[in-house]
Image (cartoon, rainbow, N blue to C red; front, side):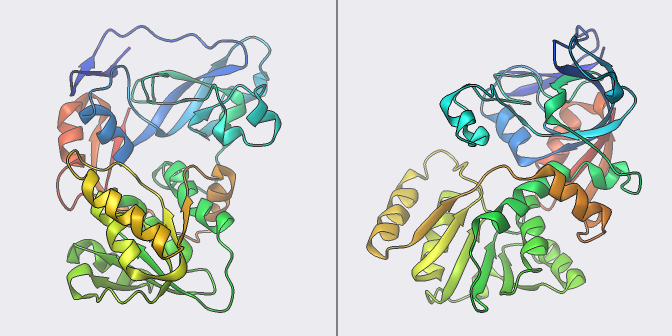
Length: 324
C-alpha cells in the first residue's frame, strides 16, 4: 500500500506501507479524492511524524466488529476529531473538546494521505449523490467556516470583516456573506481576492484599508501573529474577534502578546473557533450554496508526495487536490 510518511520535516511516499485493519466500530476507507490544507503543511513543517492528511472523499471497503455493514460501499467524508464519548466533557455535550481526543492526520492518529486508512464509523457522513468528489472533499474545511455562524449572534446589520484571503478565509467570506451583515474580505493578494468579485463579496487589499476600529466583528483567518494584532486594530470597542487559525510562525510571539493586551483594555470578545458541522457543510454543497471548485489550484497524484506538498506551499496556491 502506498502512503505518505512525514519524517524530520519532509515527506516521502512509502510504497510498502502496511494496510490498516479496521478496529471495532471503525471503517476501512479507500480515498478517491484528497485535498492538501494548511494543517497538513503545518504538520510536515512542524516536525511531526506518521501519515498526514485530513480532507478526503472515499469509499468504505470494510468495517470492523460491531459496525453496521451498511457502510460498506458508501461514498463518505469524515469528522477529523475522534472522541472517547465517556469523559466528563463528552458527557456534557462538549465532544469537540474531549479529553481523550485524537485527530486524523496528527501525531496521535495516521491521516488519509494513503491508499487505505481507518476512521470510526461514528465520524462518517454519506455524501449526497449530487455532490461530486471535487466538491465533497471541501466538506471538512467548509464545516469550519459554518462553525462561525453557530457561534455568532447577529443583531441589526453589523460590519463584518474576514481577515485573510487564503483557503479558509475565502471559504469564510462566502459563508458569512449569507448573513444579515455587511461583509468584506481583506487580504494581501490581488489574484486571490479577485475570486470575491465572482461571488459578489466586497474585498480590498490590506494596504488600502484604514485601521479605524469600526468593525463590529473581525474573523481572523490569517494564521499569523500579526493577523490578530490587525484584527484588534480593526474591531470597535466591545466588538468581537473570531480566531480561526492560531499557527503563528516562530519569532512572532511579541505581536501576539501586544494584541492580547489590547483585547483586555478594549473589552473585546475573542471567540475561539475550530471544527464545525460536516453534515451542514454537505447540505450547503448539495444545495450549491458555496463555490469550492474555484479554490482548486492544481490536481496531482498521491504518488507525487513532496512535489504535491511543495506545490501547496507556493504563494498564490489555494487547494491542491490529489487522486489516490
